[in-house]
Image 1 (tube, rainbow, N blue to C red):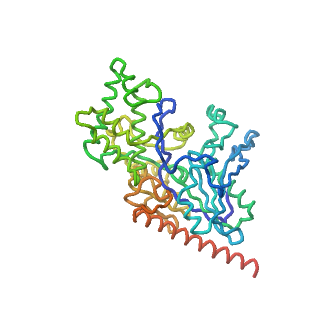
Image 2 (cartoon, rainbow, N blue to C red):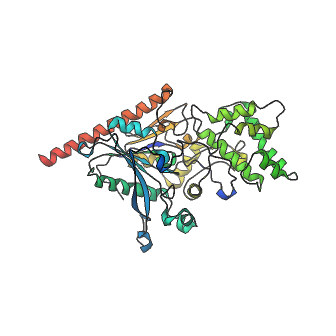
Image 3 (cartoon, rainbow, N blue to C red):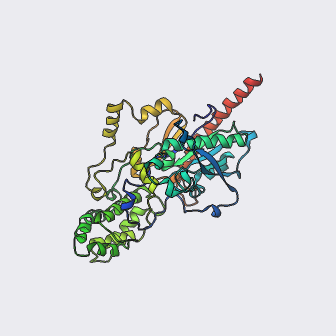
Length: 436
């Protein structure tokens, strides 16, 4: 559903596609969970200014078969604390949810934006995540491709459009510009990602230990009761059935650590500090365990995996077990293939059809190679910092933030302020034209 032409859209696109690699969830032995943007919150944990609502959402926005008229309850959250009100055409900051509970997304940089511009806060949960579950339950929704087939970025974007229109209408806020803010998958249209190994950021010994560990895992697994030995060594929640399960998980952990190598935790350095700091005489796998001990691991979500398999391009070499040996991914070659095959690339599309977008990246994030790192037009602009990693500038500001991070956010705020001034000038001119 197209939004009215007067609506202003800004996407702070922190470019990294979905955070999970394309491993089948049933093959993954869970070892823990890695903190991403925020700590997990339930609805009851939210401060009282956050109002939870539900919208009767259309299951299929792009079909007219009778079954397409089915609906589900989509959760969204409103916070009026900073809003200047509909009468002043104050903006609405829309957080477009990603692969997780929308209640986990409330404490981010979007609050500072709302406070700065007297904005209404609107958080919309992505379909098939959290409580926004089609078909009534997770078990029903995740049955097979016939029920999961409605899980796509296109359907989610149409969801967001409908909720925004609904909220504007209810609040008589049709003249309030909507500014969309998203992190990672929630802020982009699925861009190319790439794995960056630890060698660039840490010690040679750490790199070599990780590289040698793949064959060592296979060697131990081949011994009598070897899988049991590995299960006990890595303290898996359930017994390993193949060595590949462990290698898949470790590969994902390294990718995720590189992706979120943000201050103050710096998981890459912490991992290698544990590996290099193990007592003298510790074997290879013992050092890997020492590296893991300082981290908590992210757990994969089933619908997230479905999306990686159906719509997210992830050129990650030949598999996690060879992530330190596979040839580097060449973004220029990949772009050339797109141009040769289809005559377009992302710059062509954005240059012709997009406006008022900020692409924000931290170059420590290995996924940033697939992002937009140069301005495409006067209003499709790129901001990046050499030392930031995944989604860092969307985290809530703190007193300990380094100067380069403060500067990155200030640049984003100035661009938003300029676009809002443009919008209000056009709105005023339009109003004068009707009354003149």
